[in-house]
Amino acid sequence: MIPEKIAHFLESATVAMGGTRDDNFIPHAHRVSGWKMGPDEQTMTCLVAEGFTKNLLPSLEGNGHFALTVCEVPSHETYQFKGSYIGSRPIEQEDLSVYENYRKRFVERVCGLFGFSEDTVRSYLPRPALAIDFRVREIYLQTPGPGAGTRVVPREE
Amino acid sequence: MSVQLPEEIRPVLDNGVPAWVISCSRDGIPNTTVLSEVFFVDRERVALSFQFFNKTIRNIRENPHACVLLNDIEGCSNWLLQLRYDHSETEGPIFDEMDARIEAIASATGMSGIFKLKAADIYQVEYVERLECGQATDTVTADGKSGTR
Image (cartoon, rainbow over all chains, first blue to last red; front, side):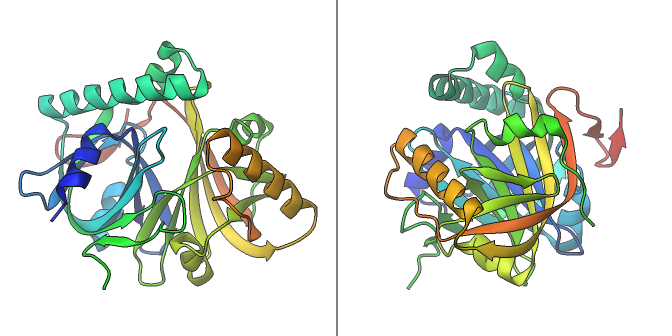
């Protein structure tokens, strides 16, 4: 379901943010410290950062809705993945490799873009605290411009 | 009920690092998107730019709640804001200042001509919290329960 082009994008993208909402339809932000596509190409694992799990599990267990936006800098190529919560688990060793790869990309790109030192940017990235699995139902293009908001999976008629 | 923004948030609002906004449709579907800047209006209000009639704008017109996350890389922290949409302005000093700053950001990032301000959406701040990276107070244990350390 996740097209090959977007699968490649996920391996090189730089930053991501998760979104949920609670029973009162109040939205919540969850910083993400790594992500990966599942082997079935229909699910994703999202590593939610330390300090950003507040309201996460009650929202996901209450209504199941999860949104993940992944962005590449400096190109601004951006996609949003909307889906349904499958489950959560503690961080495993393999997740830490995903986190380290993400951190390396983030430090390389962001230092050059904003002029921060490597140490500053590295310490800005919290370790993952919890892995969230969700089934991707829809993918939207969010790269800034007139095409932003177009649904690419399933493709709009 | 509004809360007051602390003075130390001002440089973060002006740091030029994109922020994130999470909204929710009337059907209860969350939406997460990048925001070029969050504008300080006064101690109780901020403004977000309305450039395209995108999903965030549609959601906010249906459900006025928004969550904004500001990135303070230099200060090694994030600022979490819970907002409530109040009204939109299409002229006046807030709109003019936002318009000029958006064009400056667009020029600096090679996106000139793509961003065009339609309105300054004014929000009341209902909650603000600073989250320091690496000093998290919440964690999730192996049994999936939230806890404090």
